[in-house]
Amino acid sequence: MLIDFSSRPPVPELTLQASHLSNYRRVYQASEAQVQQSGGEDTLAEYLATYERLNARAVVLKARDLESTFGAKIANEDVARFCQQHGPRYLGFAGVDPHKGMAAVRELEFAVRELGLKGLNVQGFEHKLAIDDPLLYPLYAKCIELDIPVNIHCGANFSTHCLMEYGHPRGLDRVMCQFPELRVCASPPGWPWIQELIGVAWRHPNVWIGVLAVRPKLLGKANSGYEPLLQYGKSVLKHRMIWGSAFPMMPVERTVAELQALPLSDAVREAWMLRNAEAFLRL
Image (tube, rainbow, N blue to C red; front, side, top):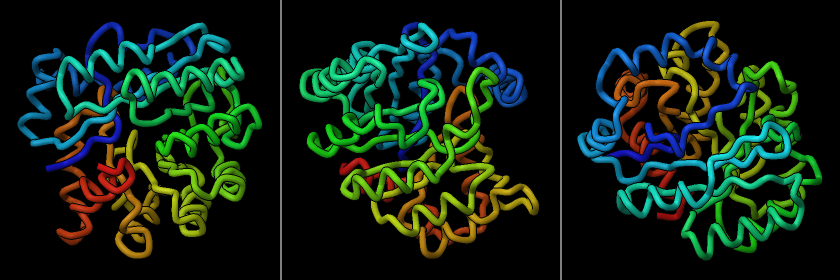
């Protein structure tokens, strides 16, 4: 049994067509080609069957509202509809546009209370905002009020329309000092500021690290920059590592196999793939 903390079904309404992501297609070209070549997950039926085969307890889908910056959106209503149609295995996180001010705060509350979404997704680089930008603070406060977790993009982004520095973990440290009750999964896991993110997570007990949008095998590869995640993730942070495939950027079953091949004890591997996400999501 496992929980995939980041996945996007292959359906048009949940596919973001936006020019600012064109460089992602170059960076992830090889991985995305493997998805297509595998023939395992590129249709909805195959996608659903994959998670059935893996006995997934939960799969997290994330909405995004980038209307102010890039004129694009994956609507909360579409994410909620998919989850309702395909059963309790699928959990949705809301996406709102912080540039819309209080309208975004109200939309988040509606998405949780009325649509049944389970958290907030903040892709700060796509809003051209740092993690600790004041525009995000009302949303963080609302997450605490609603008692929901937030996924925060942390680390480099590959969009050349946005600055890398928006995802620097120092902003997350400032946020956690202001909002210590906030439950945060920082994902992807901070590269090239891995050590800084580890420091933030070690300091703040409500910070989890999402191992997604990176091939798990790199955590065990010398000089990849990801090695500290393996070292600390099987010791002081073993209860705060969360796995996600980031499908369709990477094939689901390949990332599962690579994670299972890492030198982790059975208990730690189960924590990364299931128990930590259960705690974060309060399942």
